[in-house]
Image (cartoon, rainbow over all chains, first blue to last red; front, side, top):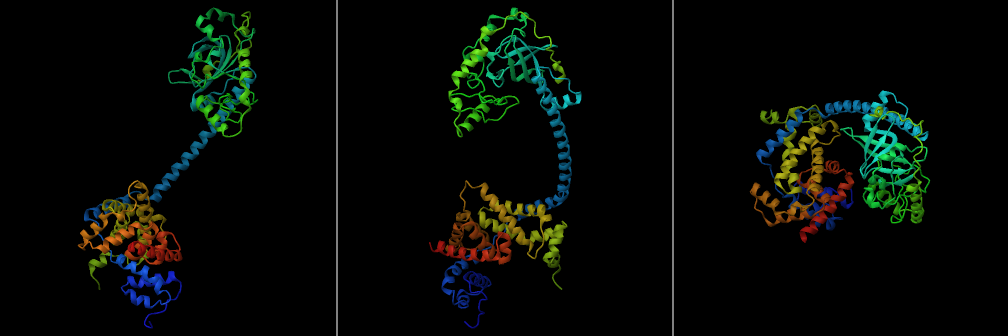
Length: 352
Length: 187
């Protein structure tokens, strides 16, 4: 007992550590325990577990795997140093970031100007004023989106022809196309010949215009072109009627009854309050771009359904009456006058 | 006057000099580090993951990762080997995550005891199997502290650095690990 130094710390953990170190150096368990009489009983069991661990044999890797590992290590050593690589990466990253920032700033400016001009012209029922060419390039190169305005002169289930001041533009309509009659969400069946429409579309590689959003204005006697009447075919005539949703060429989601946006949120493109949804999209996101259609509407509906119940539950009857009012074929104006001569849409080719 | 072969094999006697040379990407320093530590790292990996091929791969990865990360290494009085063990521990953790769908505790696998006994011509006695099996049943932290301290000979400070713990915490963990090991061995 006297031949072993007293532990400098009487705590069990320190004692176990010191004792284990001595055992690892070759001292016997009993001799070590004699040095820590106050912890001997507590230490005996854990220290006895140490002995088989210390007897674990070493294991060498195979010569081949060792050689392979050495080769890999020296290959890594010969590779460009991480410092140099990171310096190079940092340089390119910084350069790229600066470049991207400039691009983003320019594109953002172009979108603001382009969008602002379009919005202002829409508000004033005027065509977009010409935009400086370089801004066109930026705006169009970003997403190839154009906005055209004209009169619907032909209408099919999957396309319409818009007569602008310069040309007739055929625009493809699909299930993702958002269609509105004024402020009211509508379907393709609600479009009619002679309506003035503002179309936001993307131009594909082959020049095909694919409509993301169509905002039509119900024709008035002052805007209907009498020359359009002879072009009406029986099939297209039927499309002017608010028929069943089956004829609308949309999926179930888009075939819902168009309703007025009672929320007063004019910009809420996703607002399609339905009684079966149990909510409205008053709080939904404002989708200004190409409409994500059913997906977005559903998302908003599900999100809202977990939140506040909507007053839109009872909105359907009123909405239907609004729809029938706004889309009533009998309201079609008499084809007595030429279209408003002041409506001179700018050549949409500028936007392409 | 020493054996020239030995002195040639270990040109960096001082740990700080070795660390400096490693940071300078001195091939001799890296060769020395590899010669001295590769087997230890391999053994540590084998005892933790139980598969020789995986342990080979992991040991190799540790050294390539060390090369990649040497610029971030700062010598603070602890040997470079502690840093290697720390890399190894992280790599083992990643390895274990990747093969989480397989049996987690490789040391319960008889392959370890068989591998150990076959390579080292040690009879696969019951004690060896018992301790391998018992270590395999410990939680990772306990197994690590026992292996690092008593199989690979790291001191408390080095073990603390590897495990990212304080020295006091290592001692506490060590006591609990040994107590746990005893209980497992006793069944």
